[in-house]
Image 1: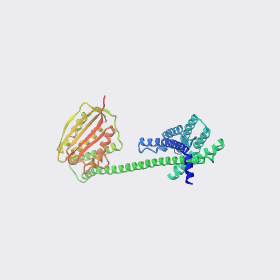
Image 2: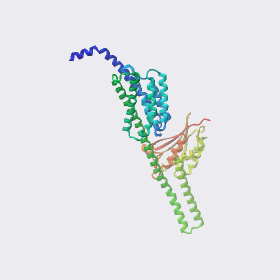
Image 3: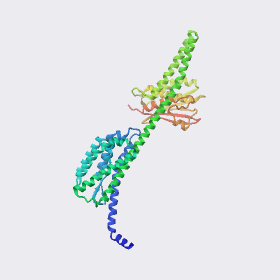
Image 4: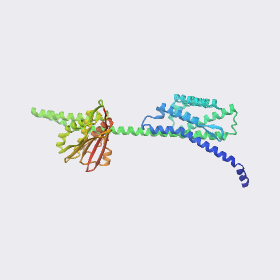
Length: 443
């Protein structure tokens, strides 16, 4: 018995080698077809901005383009099954998925792409293939409403079933039209059904996984926005309460006591000061929450920096801080909204002054390269840890004990809107350097 098997193996050795060559060619072609289907989806997902609307449902134009490319490549590079008599490709995978995710219009376009490609290729079985594609394009979109409602497992089962039915149509059409011996090649058809069914199931799972990731990201983004709004409301209410309480106190005093005219004027001035403080806070909130900027114009950075230094000089003297300029490039300009730029720089310099409660020196410099202009503000104050630096600009985070972080949030927003960036180098108890970096403007 064993010898007979050895003899059979020896006599059929050459045929087995041919089969191995055919199998290798089939596997190579199959892998290529799978690559043609999955690669465009993955590439687009990598290149697109995370957090966009659902790509597979909303971006139908790109969906149609990607699946059209997949269909054409699969048809141009088919693979043989067992022998050269049976050529196969996976064009129906993008056709079925395109119809389910894109709807009737996408399905119709994919049918035209597949039909034209099949006509250009020619050969036997062209009419059966086009008829099959037509039925897929017409019938499958009717299943779309149900498909979008069911869970992931049922979706996989549905696409697998559609794939099998489509291949059964081809098999019986070949039998009735061309007289293909179905009973002799039933094994080939079963292999094709498992092959295409497995690929379409895996592709559907990939799409569903991407959609799930998008949904989770959007949910997280929405949660973060709500958390930001909550922190924002807490910060603004906390800051507004102080001037409002002061105003309320002054009004009550003027109501309950008969003060002299000079004292009343003093109280009025204090009330106006507190009102202006509340207005400034609201302006800061609006700058961050709904930024509005005037037209960006080219201005010399040095002039604006000198203007801000002049504004902040009295405050620095009160805090016993000496401001000095270490370098001033007077030749470069940037595109800016002057008022907003000054507001951002005032916030940075104020932070530097307040970081030195016992006084000290605050160095300011304007430097430039061929492409960038940078404003440096360096203090020798309390400094920050790496974690504190990382959280700068976040809602309700401040390096000051009683701060809300609103000023730095506004500063980061302004600099970002002017196509700039803020770099921070800080060390605890050693000081901090803020660098406001902008692209230079050449007239």
